[in-house]
Length: 139
Image (cartoon, rainbow, N blue to C red):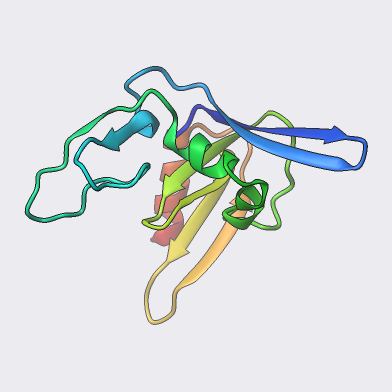
């Protein structure tokens, strides 16, 4: 998902962070399951029911990450990534919560006998270029 930014406010000695959504109505980040019993932000995982997603009116990653200030830092994928006010971010549902990273950071996963996760800052690439770079790095 794109269309999200991180806002950082420093007021005296207090640091406040917020995820701001810029996605339009009907965007993937605003969808949630309508089935009774599904939690906010989850999609239906009950095999006996068909999942019915609809626009909830709110951005699910923003709701999740903004409910507790510690979550933004806790769910950041790249702890070495410098943070900046207004930086574009990508939010991803991992089954337990929303992880996020800067939109100009590419996460490359190399599989084989051993799995390594490395990150590289690659500014000025479109998502398609970043995907191509990641694919080339896997080969």
